[in-house]
Length: 426
Ligand SMILES: Cc1cc2nc3c(=O)[nH]c(=O)nc-3n(C[C@H](O)[C@H](O)[C@H](O)COP(=O)(O)OP(=O)(O)OC[C@H]3O[C@@H](n4cnc5c(N)ncnc54)[C@H](O)[C@@H]3O)c2cc1C
Image 1 (cartoon, protein in one colour):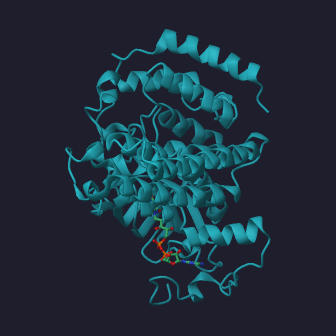
Image 2: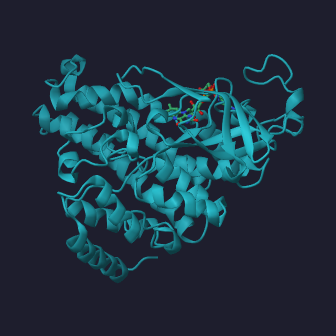
């Protein structure tokens, strides 16, 4: 347990580091480099890999100090939130050396190439194939719902490398370069106006054997780590990106002060930014509509506040597991489920407060139509990172110890299965 003294000591250390290093006129690239290399950008990472090896609780103290100083947040995104901790757990020293610096300093953005048209909840049914060719693998297939693919430099790719093994055992985890002739990315338009998602098509795309994370055929174990960080990240609101990292996002050479002023706000990231702040929106809606004294509104806002606060405490419990040397486990599913329920409740309360104004869109709508955007985006959290039903299954089986869902195909070689979109034997 972190003591008050310990937290105060860290807060003092961060404050003096910020005094010496934070410069609103610096470029984002320079600030993120300083932050990443100092270890204060991602303090939960190991000390030898751009972190401080501290708990999530202490990392919260660091974030609070950065916010208090008005400093730009560290780079956020799937590479930083999911890729880096997966590398720390499973990658070789050479791979960590090659990729962790770029992630820590925001020079690189990564995407997650897991879901396919016929493999979402049943991810292990994925059909994208990788075939060995000397020092490389050749990839063919299709992914879908790939958030941020157009901004990404690399992707965490799951591909089938052995069709003779049962479905969970013939999958390999690669880090693939996105900029190459064999990869085509097509954006998917969402009903909230953004196009965060993409379809990604692989036609003889290439990835070096040196980019296999974990064992060939052992990708499922590595993927479980990524998914656990995804669930606990969404549950904790930690997958928000204040600003998307990477060269393609186009603001590494902007001054921090401009980014903070929102001059280069990225509408593509708007959906992710709602994952953590439903309670704030409900409260702001009450203020904006002059309804803070309405007893029913007060009741609704207080209920949402209590729900978010309870979720925060629940997250701390999950973080205690990680602190004692573990990785996020099934308790991440509880956090994610609760986060989805909370966001839906916040949407309903906030839209209720807006009343007929909730039908307006555009900048001159109350709160710049943020509540309407929440309403059009909130359902996404109950699907992303594993649907609510899948989280219920995980909690039932792995937390409550209920009987497992029957899995008749678990020990059948993949080539004999007719799964997902697979119409004919491969
Ligand atoms: C905001 C967002 C961002 C995303 N970003 C990415 C990304 O970057 N990379 C990526 O790879 N994927 C991403 N996804 C995809 C996401 O992981 C999948 O949508 C999710 O896993 C569900 O898969 P599916 O859409 O194929 O639905 P399906 O698996 O087809 O599910 C359809 C319905 O059946 C239910 N169902 C399925 N199996 C069971 C079961 N065993 N028990 C009970 N009910 C079941 C589901 O709950 C759901 O209601 C994203 C999704 C969203 C919404």
